[in-house]
Length: 133
Image 1: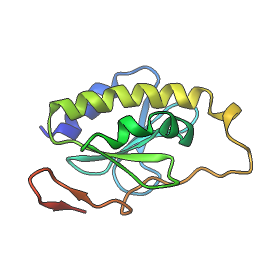
Image 2: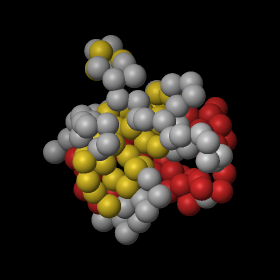
Image 3: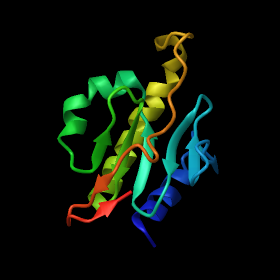
């Protein structure tokens, strides 16, 4: 079983999340009542919809992790799962994302449309030096 499959199994039992196809057209998504929270795109790469406010709040912590890849202006971060610790990090970040989305309607202007996930916008360099696209 891959790390992404393990993470998906753990998250599917969370009562605030429901499963369905990812809106980007690739992989499985888990959604809250407000929005899609996470896209599982491959055996190792997932996109997490944190919101811009949460990314700004945790920017330095996110940037210091080799598992996290951010695109300026995106409300999503890509999490590369190389080990169990990365899965644990993902679980923590999903909790943050759920909390951020509970206040999302109050904190984002109605004129600002949500951005799409980072799929095909991030190239992940594995810790062993191999590219993942």
